[in-house]
Image (cartoon, rainbow, N blue to C red; front, side, top):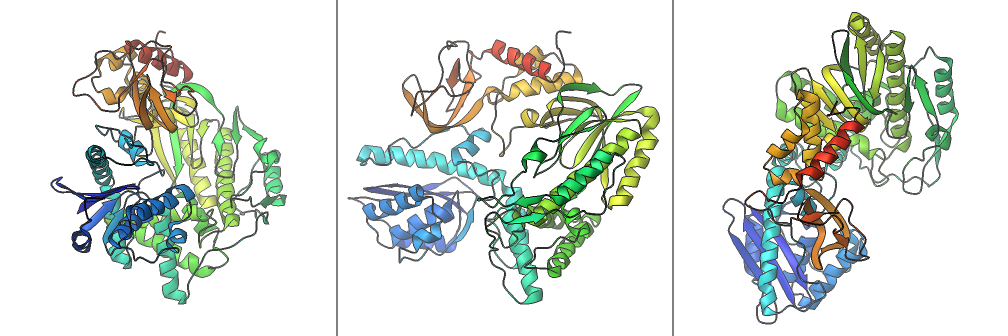
Length: 593
């Protein structure tokens, strides 16, 4: 297996390939004094698996043009058309006659979450070196600069290898799916896989193809009463009527427009307020800290596989597919549940991709599953059913302290535990959905989207600012949230967590900077990593290269584009301590109390 990357200039082409198992690198160059070894490239591509980041839309077309005999200027022109036009690659390739090089290829860009740049993913993975292209793309390349570009390309190869290893579990699942369905799904996102699998299953039954669904802008449609929701409160029942009477409108981008009256409606149940939306329900709490004690417990009730079960329970199928869609979808769900019961984790996880990923395609105007009226039917039904659960819990004498999309957190008097269990059971009977329970010792929320919850065994669940850094989330001084979480969970003073940490990656922030960033006159790149230093004046900051504006949160910061071997001596512990105290207050706690 080889990692590949390319660099293109008007007088220089570079293809770099790194063998995954031992890190050995080979460079293929093309310029005025070096011919491209096209035969060797073809042989490697024909016999080895190649791994890229955005290879389908960039590297493979560029490599194919190079081995087809394009000049450096022609390769550069193709590269510019791909980068600058933002047009789908197939529309660009229609203007060219070369064939894409035959290969066994895995493109990581769709598998990785969030569609970020390779540099940003590198920062999220704590890559040793974050480096932007060191030479302007319009430059003419000197012999000395070729060595610079080879070194730069090697760093990208190592970052891509890190990303491949981080995504290996997801890729392994895609390999299993590919074998099961007889098609290559290794380079597809979850939603793309779901669409491909469902259409494949449908085609086997109907013997027909399914293409993109077209729907005119400003198309309107209604929400239909699901027949499973009924409230005690008259105002809430009137809300169902208002939703059913409203004509939802499809916007220019294929998204359903949120009506102003719904956006401005705050739903009050008990002492809490809730906001409905196109995507899901959320409560409106701010800054709360709640602990379980001798008299009260904290219970989270989550709806299992909420949207897939709504689709099946309400029999929601795209018009172009009809009942066959439900047959296929139910078959996938049934097979997944059987795999879970049988302990077949691989099959269960593989089919989970197909089950959950399909929902997102209901809202994609480029998908054969595009059905915005079904998306609305699913999400609004989910919100109303959750509101019905909230009302029942409040009427039973407990208090819902948080709610979001598919679950609620309840502060329940211990004497009412059995009653709340009955309420949950009655709700499941009425709706046919399943609730899963988790008990907490404490919940500290800045808002519904940023909280830390402590389970009975002391383990911490975090969301938003408290979520762990991952491929989907930039680090943003993670030591701050970690210190607050440790205080909430175990009472550990903020200063102990912060000062005892010797991992510099816990003190860094990653930012994507449009147009690039500079610090003290030095160009850093479009993805920057920095920490706060007591040796850098607070008036000094990192700037946007294009307009000299300040990069957010960079006052008193020092760039850290390459991780050091030892912990820096100038880390400004006081900065992180002050910010941790602010965050602790924002979740309703006071470390000095």
